[in-house]
Length: 462
Image 1 (tube, rainbow, N blue to C red):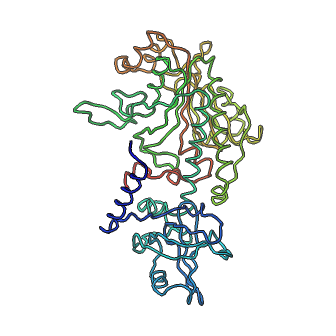
Image 2: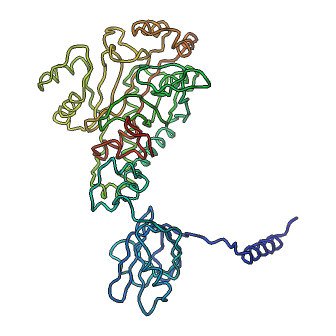
Image 3: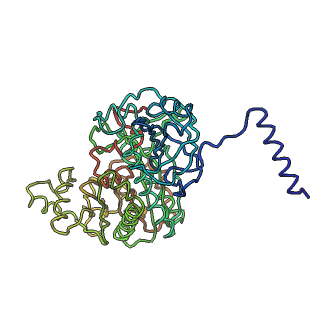
């Protein structure tokens, strides 16, 4: 049996040897700034970027920021060593430092926590930044995106992605707690699932393949497989040359599919609970970030208002917008419907249901008694479409009929349709766009603001 005193002695000998060799391990940080205890005399080590350096009378102040907050280092002439004062004066904005110090008896910092430094280690020197990240100087979005890793140092940008992360966690926690299994479906597919004109074609070992537009069809195959309740969080791509502030060529979604539904209303009930859970999580955990971004969030109550075709044509007509019977609505139509719902139901979130089948993909289920319309549902929040979904067609004969109605080659989707010969439960689902959800929630004017490294027709770098 190995004795613990022997282990301790060997460990001590190794540490001594590494020290003699100049390789002693130095901890760069013991606490994030927000976690530093308010205990006078406590000794801690923090690390981060230099926010500012200022000399006032007998004091030199240095502000250090990490992802959790800001700390003020207070150096007093006559009490602080000259070498430490020299290092402090030499610091530039956005130098990266590690600071060892003590928590003072009396806190005098107006913003953040305060530390009396005993040691400052410069981990990396920074040149003058190519863009301003303080918010005091306005910089065009394209320029900011050119320097995105620097731009993201702005605390407001960090706040955006903390909110986004919490949105996703709110959804996944709800899904996990309600029996949904997380899965990972392929991003490379052998044939278009919707319109080939909007797909990125790739060379797959000499064969023609595509980046997926949506994990839709593979989610449905998992219903055929008997998985019953699943969700998939991942990217999708659309080769759409759209330069609007709402579109990306690469976006992420939380895609959900469930079996044994009665109709699309069962899908809507799941989606609204998922939506509410995500917003609740943000309200509970991201108060500081929402305040920094100047955003107020109201958590809606279920059920959400529902508008249906063809009545939607009448609503829009009464508001001065004419849409031809059987056609889809455009961006202006969405905004008008949002206005209508706000005025009538005092809600900034609602469903649009029963879209014309003519504007929807082959796999949606039509209303049997009135097949002009599809059991297809969009969720609109603050005037922005967040998701598409509804009930899927699970009957093989109906699927093949709809393939022919859409003018598709049955062989091109045989890899998908063939499985429905062998039994499939009634099922449906939806895919909530994560960037769009964040954009609508925070009132961002451009979806690129809420995307870490956006991919758009004009941008695929950095």
